[in-house]
Every structure is written in structure tokens, then in C-alpha cells.
Image 1 (cartoon, rainbow, N blue to C red):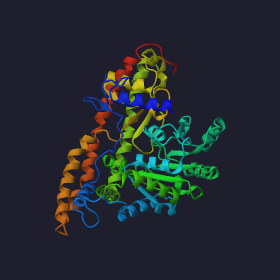
Image 2: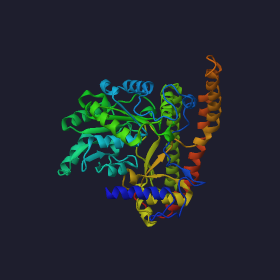
Image 3: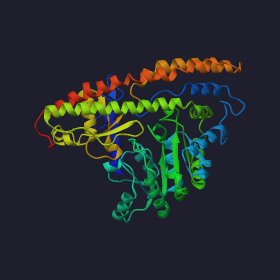
Length: 475
């Protein structure tokens, strides 16, 4: 765990523009002039109806009011909407009745660990996890072990991997799994893979937290959950929330369902540590879940288009470097995402040249790009990857390009909602929102220039400078 903690510290330092000792000495991801592929927020502001719900919430006095704590009082409409959403995703129906709502998925993780673990327990996951997962495990006094990276499996946990780990670690107490479905880099588990895991989890009496925060960003097809299988229904808690799909990252709200006993303990932990999620935020989450489906559809079409554009830009870089230095595919896209906001790339073929520049891992490589061309990537080392692997996050690229359109519709919609507090019929509201998705889609296209400038105009010259010797791995 000490090594994982140190990797996290170093990653945060480098993205903050700091050296190994925490002192500023180069550009950081949030500095002016830096193009950041390291940000992981939502890709646009929430649907205008969500802001309208907030305005109404400020005037609420019947259910609760701003001066009240709202302690332990249920938001029945929101809980019904969450439960129905879990049911639509095929989760075991009995478990969809047992809900825990908290201020973000990070707190749900902490509540889960509190509910199921003892100090010294071990949880397994694969590379490609939240940076902060290491700290959550430290806080709860549990061990986090990272299974080996298997590019053919796209960062998914397999039964074979777990069995190998058990053989190699006979003295460790395996308590459970941390499963990301979809994974951080857009791989989606198949029903066959999950069914095999489900039987194993039941047989070994393991507990699992299944993080499905990217479940509504799948480009095509439907999600299948580990918690859909009755064989593991008493072992799995499924987590979702408002940050990635609904644009509510800054409001911090997440929800989970699972076995009654575990959810009861999670709710105890939430009530003991947070009191409750504010009523207004719950109103906004309800509006997000009930927003027109075209909101998510527009986003997912853009995510796939943006992913394809990124990969084509990487291919352009590879072609240029191959022509100049006769090295085949120096940047390797390790998996083409089926969902989500991120691509995982590897520059391992450039290792000899990187070492010559005193670049020994992905954190050093991140620093190189920040210093050389003011481009920020997320280093793979703090997510469990060795070598020279970087995460390119593309979900919120050019977010600022959508603000003018979003704010115009939001303000108009909020005025309409205020009027509707006095006037029942106000049909202009629906008419005025009909062009929102078309305008936002046009705004999204402006992200192309950010990708092109970041990768082609900045990263490519930096790599040409880096490669400008003969010492490279054989093609």
C-alpha cells in the first residue's frame, strides 16, 4: 500500500505542476495555456429541467425547507426513480428496493468498506481504478491488491486471475472485489463473464462493489450487471450516480442498491457521517433521471465520435513518426472504448529514448509533456499500470464551448418554471427546448480543434524531439 500511496502523491504533484517535493516548477493541468486530457468530469451542463428543479427546491416548504436538516426523511419520488432505473438495467429486483443515497460515489465506497470489512481484509481490483481508491482503502485499514494488467481482457476481472492470486497469496484474507462495469477505459463485461464471476463470488462468499457510474455512456447495446444474477444477489452492491452521465459532478450525489443487510449498514454510516444529501440536490437528481432521453443520446453520439477522432489523430501521429524514425505504432491504443470518457495509450516502444531523457515511468512522462508542450495526460502509474501508459480523458474537452448555448436555454427555462408557479399552462417551454440538442451538437464539434491542437500541433512535435536519435526498440 505504501507504494500505491506514493504513486498517488506523485501523480497529484505532477498534475499540479509540482516536483517530487511538492514545489511548483512546471505548468499544471489547470494553468492557462495548458490543454488538459486529464480532467474527468461530465461533458456538459445538466439538462435545463435540472436547474428548474433547483429553483423550485429553494421555494419548497411543504416537504422540507432550507432551514431544516431533512434528517432521515426519505425522498420517495427520487428513491422510486432510482429503483426503477436499476430495475430497467436488469438488477435483481429484490435488491432494487434497498437503496443508499450519499454525497458522491466516493462516500458510497467508504460506506461499503465500513459495512463489510475488517482491518487487514484484502480487496482485489484491476488496473484502471479511481486515483483516490488507494486512500479510501487506507482510511478503512484494508489492503488493496492490483491484479496483473491483461490487455486482451481490457482491464476486466476474470475468475482465472482471482484463482491465480489466491494461489500466490495463501496468507492473505481475501474479502472481496472492486469491479468497474463499464471499466474506466470503456470495456463492458459480457453476460458470460459475469455469470462465471457470480458463481465464484457465491462459492467463495466474497463481497463485491460494482461501480457502474459509466453505465449510461455505453455507445451501443445494454449494460449487464453482476448484480443481475441471483447466485450473487446477496454479495453485490451496485453503485451509480449523477456525475458522469448527468453533469452533476460538482453537486456530489451517488446511489447504490444491494442486499438489505449491507445497505442497512451503509445507510447507518451515511447518516452518522453526513446526516443527509440536501433536498435540493435530490430534486435535481430526480429531474436528471426524468430528463428527456435525447439528452443522454446526444452525449453518447458525441462520445463515440470524439473517441473515433482521437484514435484517428493518434494514427496520424504514428504515421508521421514511422515515416521519420521507422518505428511502427509508437503510441499503442490498448483498447477502443465501448463506453465512457477515456482511452488508455502506451508509449512503451519509446522506452530506450525515454530513459535517455531520465523519464522512468508514466509520471515522469506526464511531466515531460507538461513542460515540453503544455499538454496534460493522466499518468497510468497511479491507476495501477506500469510502464509508460497514459489516460486520455475526452469527455469534458471543450466544455466551455457549450456554456453559451446551455446557459441561454437554462435561463429561459428557469423563467418559464417561475411563471408556471403561478400559471399552469405555459406551452412555450417545450417549444423553446426543442432545438437545444441540435445547438449543443454543433458546440460539441468545436472539441475537434482542441484534440488537433493538443495531439497534432503539440504532442507530435514533442515526440519528434524525443525520438530524434537512432536508439529505439526494433519495430
